[in-house]
Image (cartoon, rainbow, N blue to C red):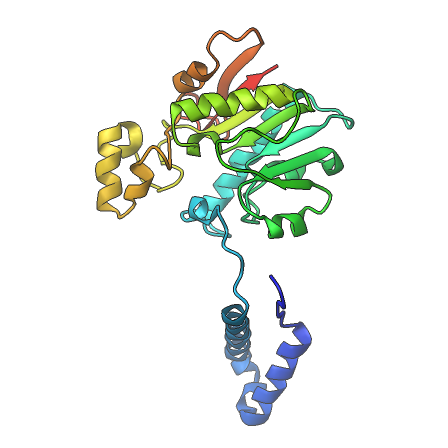
Length: 280
């Protein structure tokens, strides 16, 4: 964001002194909590004003985190699930410090729940990331990672076998169709020797993108629930394909490589929160 304005602790302290001058009562201990709240609100108002003058770049992935607000139980569960996905990635892919890794579809939302590979992997100089947004905040958060902007459902801009490992987390379900999913996985296999893909699991009791419980188990009930809750776009396959183990197996057919499909995330057997597809 150009000309970004940040309000420092010194400026907040100055604002507090101004409040004390105009309202001496706030010096009293019993008013300190109120004063702190006033200062916090004033600081947020200043930042909001700055954003009106210098708006942030639109984030492609914000819609995927609508039901996962920061510092909520939903985010804590997301972090637990994605930490387990990362462990499964390590166990299946066995990367070394020299392994080159391609992470396809990284998020331009920077939070404790997003971009688990970049948050956790110790050798980020070996990671190349790509996504469909400009991802300026991603670049600031992970400066050691090379980032390349790509087009959706298009050939990846890398030569065959360029990477040791290609991975994609929570991307496959958003590419729009079964045919696009097959192409997506084939592109990962083209550019890398090994592939690890993870997706939300349809049979987890709560649907990940809408927080609708149980009614996403069938297409019809999910469409009705989305319509009633004002979330109809999530019932359209171009936005979301609810994934099962069977659908993952269908994407790889009879390829002559070692393929595994399994549960990941919050592991609860057939009700686990996530699935993985491993190709080696």
